Length: 113
Image 1: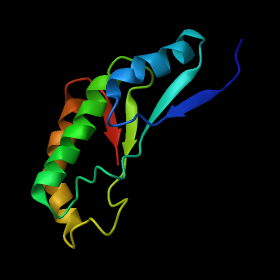
Image 2 (image 1 turned 180 degrees about the horizontal axis):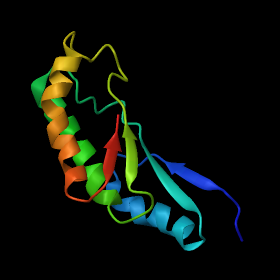
Image 3 (image 1 turned 90 degrees about the vertical axis):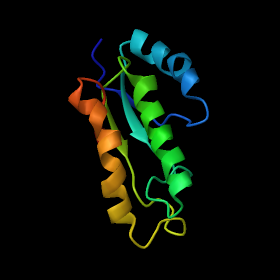
């Protein structure tokens, strides 16, 4: 039955391993699953370099977790928490974006910003 319904799923950065448990029942029922990377505590434009690096890792982990499951596109956000972002957030992001975007060139999940 064509219902035109889709689920937009935002994975929990502390529980990417649960993604199959959450997503597979929808896929098995024929419901499309789209991804939304809403990770406000994982700002890869963070002023602190170590915190930004952990955030990059969280975003890359999301890409790995969703690979081959549901629609292979995820929307990521920059600057969700402006109190954490560096005044030069865009310069910092430009430096880390290649690591996040690299998976799309290898035929995996495509991030959108």
